[in-house]
Length: 134
Image (cartoon, rainbow, N blue to C red; front, side, top):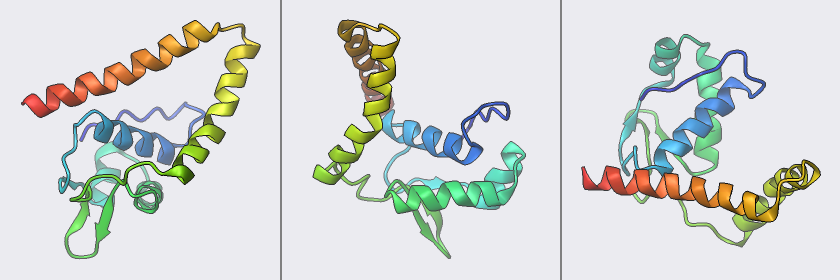
């Protein structure tokens, strides 16, 4: 697992870890049941405090992206990530509101916004299909 941590970013390091692991799942880079490095190993590999990795792993577990077992370690759930429900869709809407508002405030057309979303969606689906073919 190769994570790109940007120490100068305004995004907290633990969220960079979370987002990159979720992106890896979305792109098919991680398979159900696949093991992830331990908290201490990942922290040592990327040169950060293990408490930061622990915070990321705890958040990912709470959100259902990983499972943490004392003896078996950290892994992607065997059954995969839980399918979106009404609660998730409501949360998604809340997260998108400020992004859409900023885009409108910056005069991004609806067409350009939809294209950006579509292109990102395609990028993830293409990566996932490529990983499945390997």
